[in-house]
Image (cartoon, rainbow, N blue to C red):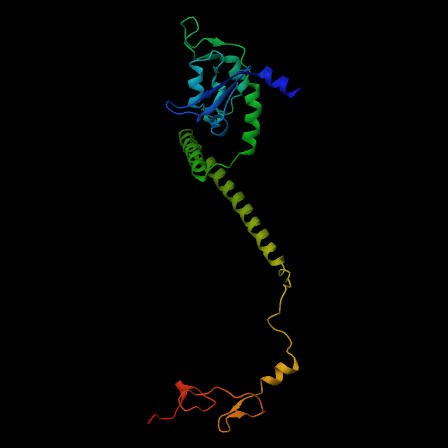
Length: 251
């Protein structure tokens, strides 16, 4: 069933590659509703028509171009509906071999397949506008409002609106800060995880505790509790110190 639908939708498949290369390039698929898909995915990612389609359009009569192929975010009026553009403007072909005429109108293009893919991709890759763009938009709008208020002698009303808006923003900001502060105060200490291995502060056995009391008697050159002897000096051959701290003078 899937193969039958695919054969009905796909009209042509073109392999486009640069001159002088072999086996390297992109594939352009032309569908029966006017939609085209290219493996470079420029139309899906950027909303722009790639050069591979224009190359195919100069040779194939099935390649149709319409303004709706470009993503609405590049329009001066991005809120315009694509169905309205399809009704107002017809698709055209770029192939110049049709009766020696160029840009002939084609009325059968619906581009439904492209719209279905683009809606999913746009929803998945929707991002917030940068602060610079938001600032530029709001600054331009506020300038127009201020100029209009001065001309209409309504700057006092506009000033009151600004003050009220600032008060509301400050109240919401203080409320948010208070919520964050309460969250920090309510936060408890993290759970302590016991890892494998010897703990840093462990209980010592009796043997370990008794070994700390041993010391070396320098005069007797042996351990006071019958243990092993201490360090042996390389200069005087005595126990209890080493050559660097030896006080015996060399003759």
